[in-house]
Every structure is written in structure tokens, then in C-alpha cells.
Image (cartoon, rainbow, N blue to C red):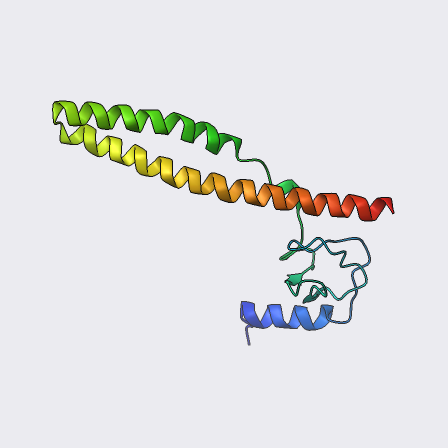
Length: 139
């Protein structure tokens, strides 16, 4: 009888239920130190569910995954003037292909700015959590 992934995950959670985290691992939502808590549980400070099993690591703060969205900013700074120039030129010569290309660059610019906003917010949150962790380790 072959077990499904969900059954294997449930049995692994049952095995890890009594095991406690021995090292300092932090909640990705608030930066709370999850040391001495079960591997699969909820953060006692913010209620964020986490899974600290080595192959899962869901809900765990990983500072190396959060970077400042520099390349998105560069792309957006490039796309905005390109879209303005293409739209102005396309409307002046009444060329639908150039207008469609300009609208495409304009939409890409809008999507990039939303992505930049999310990236900057995540970066600021990660910096705040890292600062909290550093202050906790110093005291």
C-alpha cells in the first residue's frame, strides 16, 4: 500500500511533534526566537504557523532570501521613458503597432512598480526582524 504525499507529511509531523527546536530559528512574521518549541507549531507571539523541519522550513525567517529590488528599479526606470516615447511617437504617426508596443511597456512599468513596492516592503520588514534578532543576541 503506497502512501500519498499528504499522508507522508502527516506522519512526519506526528514524528516531529515531540521534538523541540534546539537552535535559534526565528519566525518570518515577527522575528520571535522559536528555540525550545516543537518543529511544527504556531508562533506564540504572532500566531504564524511554521514548520521547522530541515527539508520544509515554512514560516521561518531566511534573511538571505530577501534582497533590495534593485534590478526591478532599473527595469522600471528604463520602461517608463520608453513607453512615453513609444506612445507619443505612435500617436503622432498613427501607427497601431507602435501604440500597442508603448501600451505594453506602460503596463510592464506599472507591474514593475507594484513588484518594487512589495520588494521594498519585504526588505524593510526583513531588516526590522534582523535588527530585532541582533538586539536579542546582544542582550
